[in-house]
Image 1 (cartoon, rainbow, N blue to C red):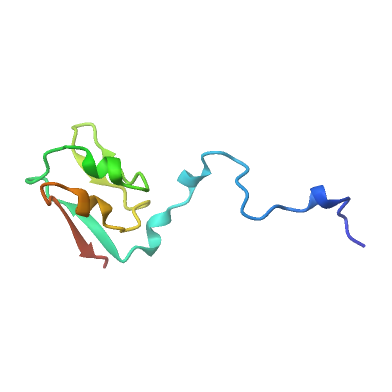
Image 2: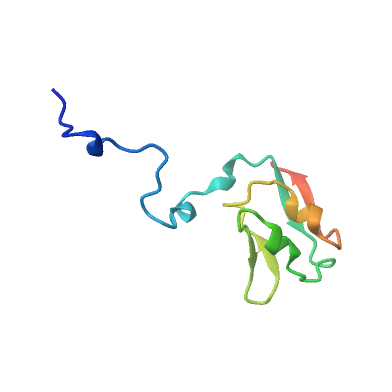
Length: 93
């Protein structure tokens, strides 16, 4: 006999019970291409930061941009949107 008391005791699939839990999971593990920023070309326009769907573009204390590879999925949107072509997508090693 089951220990379930009713339908309310059944676990819900794909439900988020704790808000903000996406930061606990490093989602960049399956990337095949990764963005690399050329600091000489970068004009710090924030376009890459604004368009990144994973919030993987971070702004450092000195105002330089860097990619958080723990969360970057390698979609290439940042490289596509960069007006100075300061971001190059290279094959993940």
